[in-house]
Image (tube, rainbow, N blue to C red; front, side):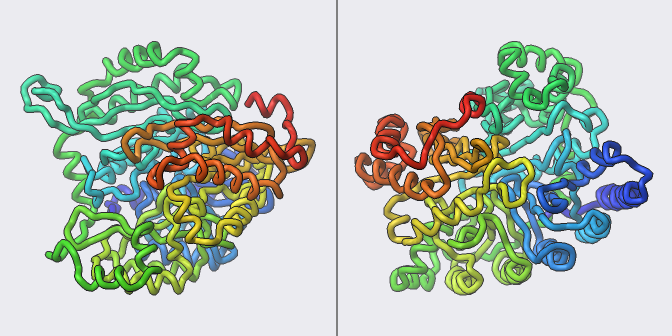
Length: 581
């Protein structure tokens, strides 16, 4: 965990005091709605369909058990006893009262948390790989680099009013588990393979970053463009600053739908945008923001580190339990991942049990998971962008006991990477921007595929649902993506297939899904998903060939024919404007 220093704590405490005064003046009628809007947004407060929504920052998805207990207390006292973990590794409370928001922020500050820049046209929460620090394929511990970027970007005066919101993802491992190609800036750690380092004298193999700019989902989904294959680590902040300066200078402010950096990169062309960044960087390179080893060590020293025991590479009790308990073995196969330290493993607690809204967690579950983290994972946990929770440092010999306790809490569904591990935004049940509901659709699909044996036979499959074009459910990169659209005041759903979040395995780059045809009515969605699965099972060449692999091999036409060939009721073309979008 990153531990605040005096400056960190003072910053969040002063921010709470400022917002308390701003809220008091607004409620007293001394601040207009227009004046207050930007102030509340900078503190994570939205006005949603039924009530204000508070988005609480969880920087790079890392939480302590104490912080999770505080989130449970806040949700119980000031909300309705639950919270929603989002795809940006944050927590959202959907029923707070405006007058209570300053008290909530004060409570968060006591445990080194805040809601700064979780909204507004600023740099949002920086996300990373949920296995950071423990993955066997790790190149660098991305938490340190995320924290350097967080400190640099928080309340940065030059970038406090960008043309639009700005999202950065950092990936420190060989596999891209942070979807770097689908962010405004993606930073993927790499090692220089040349004979010398960037200074022309040091040996090759130094750490740097592949810099990807202009990716994103939403109304205009685009896979990002590589601006630099290798950026030496000392220049990380200066190069990112150059990118943001170019965006701040040329990004559109006259049209909210064309304000993201991806639109600017496309309009200028990636080549010209890169030239503009390089010209800007010429003024910043080797300047005050250049990182030094001392600065990296300073930030690194603010993190507490796990204390690992010397354990055998394989625990015999764990292996024996796998052999005799099929339920435990199924969970271990899907929800347990390798650890770089012998005798340890990482564990995913699934927030996708059938009947539960994806990503939701009750206050009681939060308290219980905090207790589990203390007993089994050195008091820490992570939030994944797939809306699950991760215990990063579990001893193999404790896995069976943890499974039993997680199962009793409804958090041990063995479905990570499978069809029912659905990513979904809150949708029309809460969000004022949504065209359609997401949660009931996710639940209907989970109920249709509630047979875990069948889901395991289907194999790896990402299914993502968004209630509108903003793509908070990342439907564009789902192997199956579902998008809610409005058709004459009714909720309909557009289906796409073939999306992929990034290089999580060889030969599987980031890709955007293709729409297979006209939108369908909500009641048809489980049938459509089943029909898509039928085509896959019929056409796969082996059990190792995933749904996405079959789509890429045979194209979308066989799937389209199965869904639409024999059905003329329950689907209809949505308006041309939506189809074009």
